[in-house]
Length: 113
Image (cartoon, rainbow, N blue to C red; front, side, top):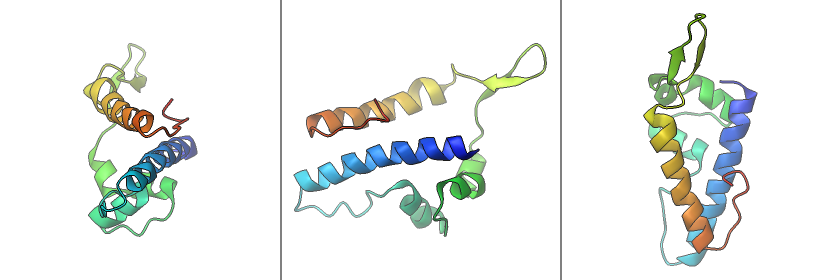
């Protein structure tokens, strides 16, 4: 992971924060105790003390267990396996749900867009 990765995660989490805040505003009587941002969720679930997204990506025990799907090319180099479930299901469906909620609550999510 590099700074570009961290910036993308941060921008995506900013959009998710916009959606979370809109949900809280729409349902003010509910606590949503575990509706957390990326770093807060990591601190809760993995006892992390990271306050920096890049450090989190590099040091995360959880992410260390998840291998980025790659495929080896004929010349011996590797590229992202863009047809893996991670790219065809996990990312799009999670983002589509957030986008739908954003539309329903009339908030903008520029990075998701």
